[in-house]
Length: 250
Image 1 (cartoon, one colour):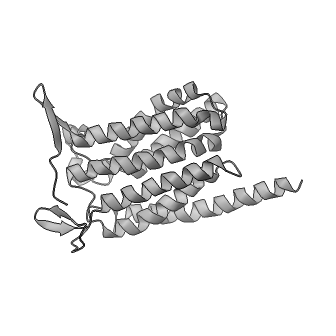
Image 2 (cartoon, helix red, strand yellow):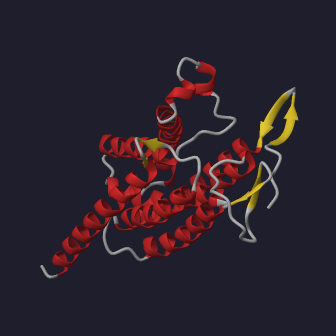
Image 3 (tube, one colour):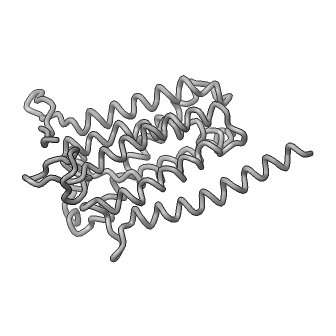
């Protein structure tokens, strides 16, 4: 897999990056999915656009802040570097934290059940991640260490694990699973917590292969967070499932 050209085209002297195009496309597709599936969750489709106008900017800000904080020595004192996301540098965990927090706060404000909305959003988040990871490919980032596997990608003359591809494939399969689960969900929160469990499981192991991980001391922060989310979400998932079963007997 050869290294790509990160520049899609030039307009009025400005280089338009594939990274931005792909991330934007991922967001649009996710919004369309949420909009079309909103009635399944008894949420007006038009109302989802109100969430989008707040949650997507919150997610972008959160993903950038998260990345900058864990690379502070590189960004400290340089405002341009801090706000220049065209060359990459968005951490999905930061985007999820800020975006989902904004969604929950809006649910409380607008009297919408948070778990119902999160179930609606989970499949769309998964497919957006699957598509968005290809932005890492064009920026030659989020890759793993050396390998001689036939699907390796070339970075600076060295063949390495295309970890972006591993996550893209997993998230696409996750999208299919979540759509099926959401269409047949037994309790509110089932789709969302299953997303957290399955994505965290994959991210923990793929992160081990990566060479550009954000660090927390000697540990890879994505692995620490993934392990924590995996355990907590399994516990909550079991509690919600048991609660739903108990209701059936009343």
